[in-house]
Amino acid sequence: METEKFNVKNRLLMGITLFSMFFGAGNLIFPPFLGAQAGTHTWTAFLGFAASAVGLPVLGVVAVTLSGGLDRLASRVHPKFAFVYTIILYLAIGPCLAIPRTASTSFSITVQPFVPKGVSLGTVQLIYSLVFFALAALVALHPERLTDFLGRWLSPILLILIVSVFVGTLLKSPGEAAAPASAYQSMAPVQGFLDGYQTMDTLAALNFGLIIAVNIRAKGITKEKSVMNETICAGWIAGIVLLAVYGALTFIGMHSGERFPDTENGTEVLTAVSGFLFGKTGMIILAACFFIACFNTCVGLLSCCGKYFNSICPRLSHRTWVWGFAAVSLLIANVGLNAILKFSIPVLNAIYPLAILLIVLAFSDRWLKRFRYVYPCAALFCGVSSILMVLEQQGVFGEKISDIFRLIPGYTAGFGWLIPTMAGIVLGIIAGAGALRRR
Image (cartoon, rainbow, N blue to C red):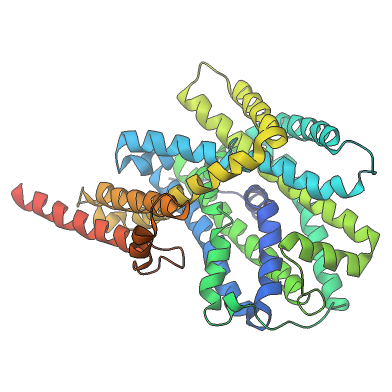
């Protein structure tokens, strides 16, 4: 049977489109701050960052594609689990957190510094958000054309802007790498992994493959096997571009640490370096970077959320879902973003380990699928331990119980769920082996 496949140009276009959906404001600010903080230990820290911020998302795209979609992968735990988990995931990375944050974050860099004194900041933000979400929704209404909007036009502009700052740093370095901050002195790769963990791109990876597949079909690939192959190829290309861009941004941050030692986040690092290199023009370059990065991610998330909720509730069209999510995001971005952040971030921390677990199990399925209890046992132990640890971090439990949590290996580093999850996998294998013997 003849296999359909793209030429090099279309493959690059799909990969760049997927990159643009991943690369939001958080992806722009985490690497330079890592470089500034890690200093002389930057590249060992970057190895850990690359593993979690590039490796896991790429593997997520591959895992979901090979499994036939997130619904099918999560259904290996239980169909009801798949339904509930998928809805929570879409809401968490969609209108309840990530989509509103794209507007508020881009506004703080793109518009706020240029608003004259005496002008109502709230009014300006409302107008900006209206325009931002209206444009994003209009693009998101056509998920099959995202390669034209994001891959062909906006992403190349974003990459050129980032490269300009990188080249400027090469030619006119702000300074040398500083001494590493305490978090990076002894276990730089581990801290780097945790920094990349915060991008939350692994959650997005479980969903973005769906939209890329739609674009692949729109380009004339019809055979399912070929669509899967091209989606996986797009994932690897996006990973390579992410790795290169993260490396450039980390390099920029590393050379800022000595001259700008008091920066508190990646935004301040990029602002300081851009101003040093290009003066007032640097602020315009930075504003354009943030706007394009946030806009691309907003479009991708609106498309994914609209596509999924239209599939489970077809009475409401994709158009209705997209405009509805844009309206909710507009409201949250201008009224209650801080409150929703306090609620949504713990939710993300609770569901993120489950995403990693599903990816690992997807690649282990050929060996574990005969043990039918592995998926439910592992998901139960992983989910319960993650929720309990989030509750502990929120101060729900007393000091004595908190002391017990701290005894769990990896807890202080953010991986307290790992040992319980491994115990769940072992228990699932034992239970599954017993069921096989009874047959």
